[in-house]
Length: 230
Image 1: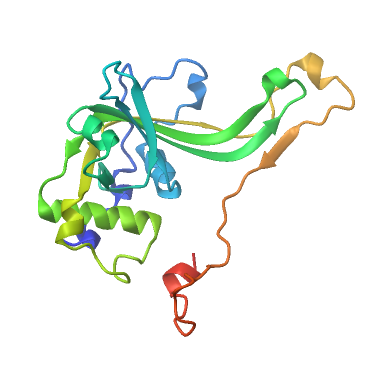
Image 2 (image 1 turned 135 degrees about the vertical axis):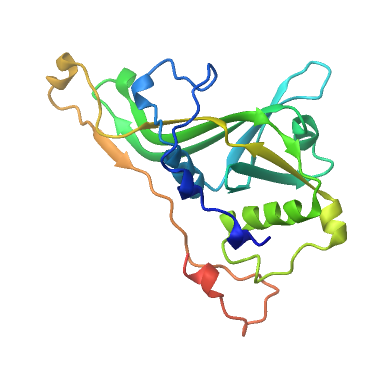
């Protein structure tokens, strides 16, 4: 099965996110986004997620690490070295994955009311080691195409040795929550009446700069369209 044959996540846009004790918001519950399509929009825009696992040291300290990811249908995939502690600790265990996007910094008339406009997702589930060779390749393709679209068909694909050294974890997107804030500052009336204190939103944007060729790259090798046009 090719990556293009997998169903688009937008097919599930009319489904609501799961409601469990772990995904229900306490403070600022009005920022909850119940539409499952909101989850996919956050995942589509994010380049990095944070994987939280129970540590394997004697003290049982937790470990949270940033990593690239990809997803197909309702499954999120993570990859790393087979020797990585994070993947050893997450394999088969309950994990927590978070994704955050910052859209703006909110300047209020009081420092207590300062905030940020953001979109975030929290995903809970059991991490399943991917051992099937076909699924493993599809997962790695999904990760590559999510972070660097167009690279799977442009660069050399992993060989047997590289695949053997790479661990892949799969986590279902079944139990997840999405939280978001947008809009201007929310100040107390007494603070709004204060003269001379600026309040508003400073937008935060992510953009790509001009491609920087590898120093070892021959000068006559052009920048491919999938890099140039991002």
